[in-house]
Image 1 (cartoon, rainbow, N blue to C red):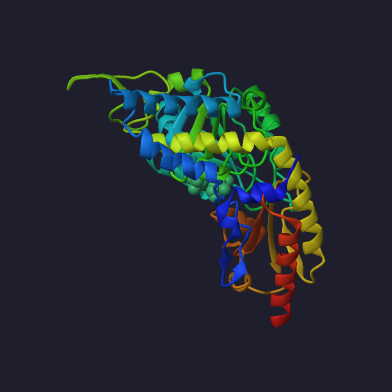
Image 2: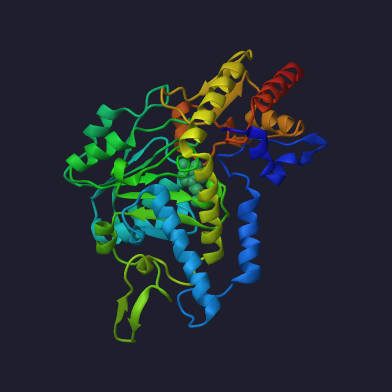
Length: 404
Ligand code: PMP
């Protein structure tokens, strides 16, 4: 049973006020709020188990190591990966993509080799490839989209050449909400012998993700967007790929033996995890995944879909409303502009009504260029948002519109 009031009680921040008004938090695409169990897990581990992992003979270190590795198993189960060797802990999606760009770029890409991205990528799935382009002379090719915000799959297929080495594409657009057909796109890439990295920053928090069913070779996400703590994220990679790739950073944990002449590297997944990991963060992330799993990812998906459909219909009642992103398959994100009100002004005035939204280019400037705009206002919903909050958003926009 989906009991929204009970769910909201798990998130203390949702009952605070801003400017004397109840907080209406619609910036979940940027980061999500934390349930009490996640915050408690952080405090509890610091108070009762804290010790560095993987290196102590003592009791606490062993217990901390067990919690950290159990968290890896929780992530494995959540993504339905084959093995915990395929779960690399990172700082977040951005670091996961940078890790892959550095490691895959080093091992598999030479001057003139190509990576395929899409026009709706977040900067974190563009700039690492541009850095690689500057270092190695690789070529970036871009999948275009139609005006509804759907990738053009015929064009995508035509981008493959004998020099294509990787496809790196977002599962869900953080601006348009488009859910890209990554399973189909992966099958296309594999038919050309090319592996695929999926940016799951906006999908993992909102829908069931099964990396084996998708057949993605690499999959990245951030803890803080899926109700976990900041500073921890995941790179999933198929073991046969991760085995072949060189380490990303050097240091403790990732080695087997070090001499000044030669160093041998640790086995997976530690080969990619130099230094003390955020073992408190991984534990809290696992609690967050347990939390959403208890509600059910399919239930979350269905609830948010219904809420977003309701919000879209209500927003369209507003005169001058322009919604960017009307793909058939769409997640819980709505980007919009109203008349000629500047997105920043609209966002700022709505903020004074207690409504937290994101405004600007959303770290997707090439997409803004494609849309011919500077920025939008974005409402991004979570399973704890309500129809009443959507109604308040609509009333707030009407109020601002009348001021202009
Ligand atoms: N990709 C997408 C699609 C995103 O929405 C975001 C966060 N806005 C990122 C990557 C980057 O995530 P992080 O900042 O947590 O590394």
